[in-house]
Length: 377
Image 1 (tube, one colour):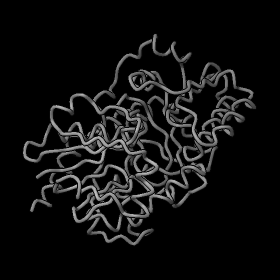
Image 2 (tube, helix red, strand yellow; image 1 turned 60 degrees about the vertical axis):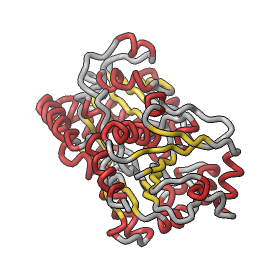
Image 3 (tube, rainbow, N blue to C red; image 1 turned 120 degrees about the horizontal axis):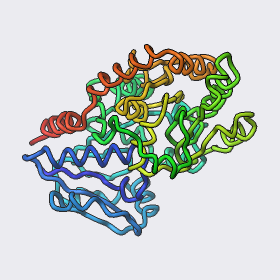
């Protein structure tokens, strides 16, 4: 069977969780599947190249239409129909993106519905893009939906009325590069990071609730263990996203701002060292379809405090301390308990290592290939 993978997402050269999901999943599919053949579809005047190692295993159809023209034509004219131009048996889209098809079945991954529940988390440009994509129509037209978590699966059922039979939950995997190591002092110095430190790693945007991390840090630094935490730092690692200014204001107004380190964008190869140097990883996100950073931290042997909302409780369970993301005091108390209680640290590290065994890219790829094969004519 010939399967077309819509790889337009990778043409932009970004490095978000969805791009990483796409790259690691495709890597494993190409390495595992010895039966089906694969082709890629990309488009745009300026495109980032796909990984060279994929070129020996798959054909690339690289169109050069301006993306805006392609998107407008796809939405309003339902043209060009890709399967009238190219011959394949099945389409896999690792993220929603309008793709006109005549009659070829499509499998579509939906990572979360945060843009429906919390439009305030997104810029006007992103809100327009979500509207323009007409996601419910794409979901209805697809033959199968892949959800990253049971939370997202249930959200699709309850929010959009999608039948349960049409949705398959397949957990993403976890890269082998995340593991326990001695962090490189060179890497930490590169980002001006000083131990000991609490860590948040991710985009600085409202959905991630970074302001609460800063507020909880202020409580810790002024609380009953303030002498013990005198040298404690907070590292906020990641690029600035939508409405990051509120976080910067909270940092600048903190009496402990000299202990708060903003790294800016972190290179992918440096994340393992930054995780490994942390005392606690803090991730009180309001909304996650999956939430890679909390699992990456666990793989590096770091105790995790995370939100008890959306998918995070499902993915972490008792292997992390879960708190209400709106209760800053609870967040501070959970971090404090880990910092002062060696037994809690040991338990959470051990539980974290056990938890991450559930997430394997090889298993993700095998589960998806088995779904592909059900469409074999």
